[in-house]
Length: 336
Ligand code: NAP
Ligand code: GDD
Image (cartoon, rainbow, N blue to C red; front, side):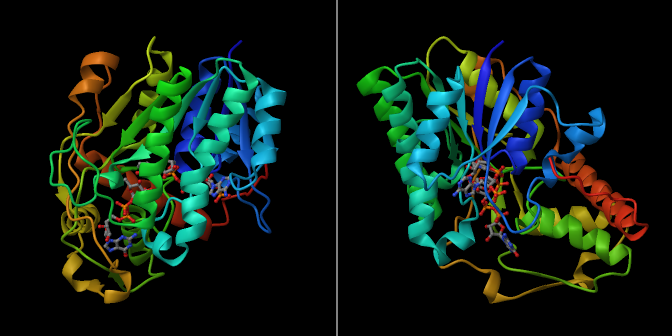
């Protein structure tokens, strides 16, 4: 039985990756952080489906800012694969907490790579790199496109990207970067734009909210469906040689188009509910990200399946269901 160690298990991607790895028969070890309130809600459906925590899932307290906690975990678990998904992942927030973001989203990658090096185990390493690294370099972006990050988050991810490449070249570690473009789902954090929109649409329909306040509606993103993107992470670590891959749909839409499509799903005119406020704009914006994932298709056989409209519709539908369940008292919180 293969063993995987995943950081960021309580996040959107972590929850989907854990499901994928458990389904493939892995023993999965995940990190979670101490929090004053429950922070494992995304893992709850695993418990709900089975009636208890899956036997092959082990959650450990650790923090990417705490080298000892990471080194001890690698030593104790002896994983075949590590997926480094943990990060301060919000671009706007990274302008408010730049040094913390540099530490957790940047330097922490070296902590994990050093733990692998010291262990001598031959553990394979996945680094959650990001299209934010391309920043202001115009689209389409692929593996050869130069980086020009536009935020402390983007700069920290560039540091981690090169750390993974360097440990591959210097020490022969099987370390791969997945340069993932935006990917969404109903498990997406509520302050990222897609989920903020679909949640607001659901709440407006149910009479719990009257307006939606956004920032820059002109930004263009390449939005895919998160469960398909974690499959690409796994494929990278199964490949004989480590390498770097862009994962994207290649299809571009503006934030305005996302808003329009989300309100259209419930037959509402978005212009009656949406206004903009400069407080949601960033000191420096990334105008357009559109990925060329042809290398991943050619080498890994990975291709996106869910279309933009399907993604918007499924997120609106799930949020409507959640709001209705919550109102009827149907949602039960289980800590895992
Ligand atoms: P997310 O939902 O924000 O999840 C981030 C995870 O990191 C959470 O589990 C969080 O724990 C954990 N974390 C934060 N600070 C930590 C710390 N100091 N120590 C340990 N864990 C910490 O992000 P996501 O959307 O799943 O993205 C997963 C990874 O892919 C991130 O590295 C992100 O930067 C990167 N990425 C995401 C996208 C995308 O479109 N989603 C695209 C490209 C790259 P808590 O729950 O306790 O906060
Ligand atoms: N969050 C947010 N909130 N974004 C808004 C809003 C708003 O009210 N209004 C407009 N936007 C615009 C942002 O300015 C940005 O151009 C775009 O919507 C997308 O913002 P986010 O959903 O916050 O995502 P992101 O593209 O900045 O970052 C996400 O994708 C990266 C990959 O490109 C995050 O998941 C990163 O962790 C990830 O690396």
